[in-house]
Image (cartoon, rainbow, N blue to C red; front, side):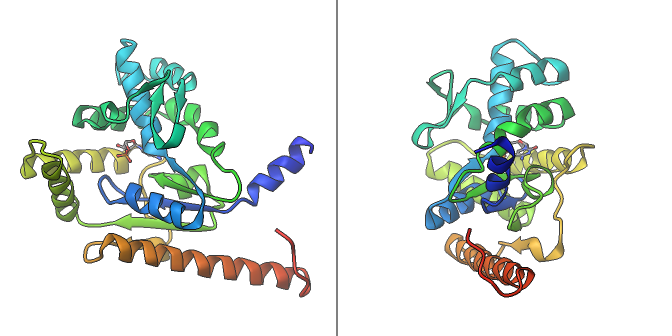
Amino acid sequence: MTAGVHDAALARVPVIAIDGPTASGKGTIAQRVAAALGFHYLDSGALYRLTAFAALRAGVAADDAPGVAVVAGALPVAFPEGRIELAGEDVGDAIRTEAMSQAASVVAAHPAVRSALLERQRAFRQPPGLVSDGRDMGSVVFPDALLKVFLTATAETRAERRYKQLMEKGLAANLASILHDLRTRDARDSGRAVAPLQAGAPEAVLDSDDLTIEEVVAIVLERYRIAVRVQASGRSAGAGGSTLQD
Ligand code: DC
């Protein structure tokens, strides 16, 4: 297969892009949707967290944009069986601390860091399909995604969910400080100049305030089925009624 044909084939691999603010439940929803469809899963936030983690370890400050971009470009990362590894070390827990969340949000605001991670994210688009979650999946990384979802909930709901999660893990948690940290990250992720968090089309919005995880998953799957049907009918209309093979 030539590179052009290969690229064209990959461009037809369906992508479900799930964007949303901090603690909106994107990760959980995206993983369940991926499992239901047998698709690959990309946690793009993990790449920004890994970049922040690797930079701090290398003694590069989070606000040193060129320095962090070099780290992002050479990130020795692997995701074997759902684990998150940096140079063979399991760092799944280490990148989820509050300090790393804030540092990830700082490094993610550097345009050079975002470009350094772009192709790495697109490489996850492999048959039979991909579900990716983040802030700019639908706007920048996979603008041609078959389905774009903007998953949201009020800051209070999201803070309460995070609080419960930490309590269930037996970790110390303070609701007021969670809410404060979450709003700080929201403001940074939405206010930055490059690839800010944005809702996109109004029909992409899925407000999860009064919904269970199962209900949200079911809605996303239903929207996906509709998107597949619409795409198929568009293709057969474009081909004069003949059936195109995917
Ligand atoms: O989704 P998360 O909380 O793990 O993301 C960590 C940080 O990375 C978050 O503050 C915003 C940033 N991020 C981003 O800018 N673009 C993405 N596609 C994913 C995450």
